[in-house]
Picture 1: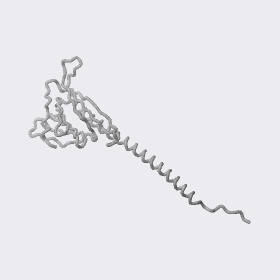
Picture 2: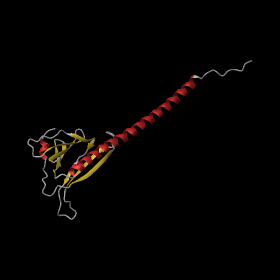
Picture 3: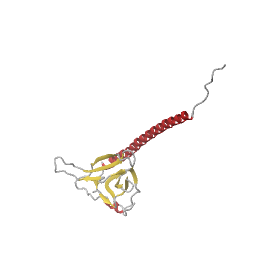
Picture 4: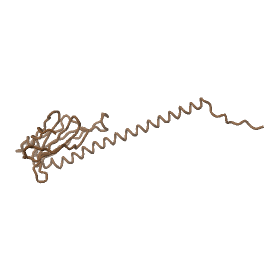
Amino acid sequence: MRPPRNDDGVSLVELLVAIALMAMVGAMFTGGILQIYKSVNKADSAYTAQTQVNSAFSRLDSEIRYSRSVSTPAKVSGDFYVEYLVELNDVDTCVELRLRTSTSELQRRSWSQGVTPVTPTGWTTLASGVTSTTPFTTYAVDKNSLTGFRFQRLTVNFYTAAGGAGTGSTRQTNVTFSALNATAGDNVSTCTEGRSVSS
């Protein structure tokens, strides 16, 4: 006589238990992969936003540092503006910065000073995803004070979403530039004529 063979297979209950276990393992694995993806995406968004702002501020530093005058910032039609006068390629050039609130973009354009009519270049986006309630603040020359400054200064203050829009996490960038060629006699309304020229 032959011994009984053990090839009856598995019962329906055992099969259902195995499927349930595999479904749980698959769900945990998928959840883990999604969490890793979200973390990487958040870090990448934060890095991209901060890199944009740093690049914009490096460019502004090279221009504002040598400007001869910085205007008084203003809010026009919901957007924030500030202008400065600088020599670019041996030409006196007005440069205008704008925080466009509808698109959360820091933008720049320029035109030659003294040319009528004012014909600015198109807006160039320096950074996107930026917000602020007071993006531009200027400080006048203060030669009389012991702790005063001999040059005009422009403070640029922005918030960027640290992990992309909707994450609720923001980073603040607050930088003060000194206009080393701007003295007490400079006109704070320099180059403001560009504000009336639509984009």
